[in-house]
Length: 126
Image (cartoon, rainbow, N blue to C red; front, side):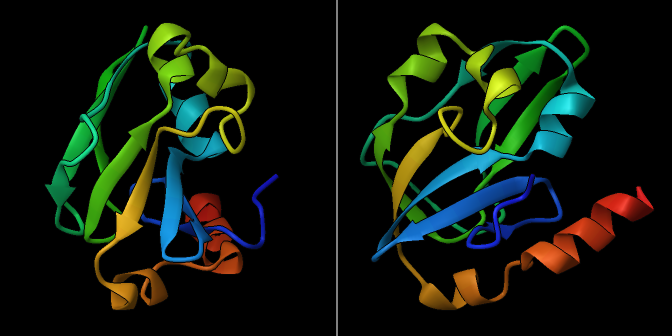
């Protein structure tokens, strides 16, 4: 359920590297906690964020939650399908439900993120 080649945050975002670029989304755990997702607010390409900074939000029938940058990053693309059909996150959070493609600004940030075993421990404690 949680891909081994992804890294995870304590705020339930995932990141998958592709060279010096990466894609970011929210985890299956996060989408289950949120329930039915109805709206996603994402930044435009070119925006830069520091690790831990909120860069968007997800609205569900239960709540609105911020999405945090797992690494220092520059947004290079937004998943338009998520803007048009946010419920895609509920059905495929770790695949078609990705949010943004980014350029990693600091490789050290990526190395500090949780590996899959550590993330599973984190969610089993919640």
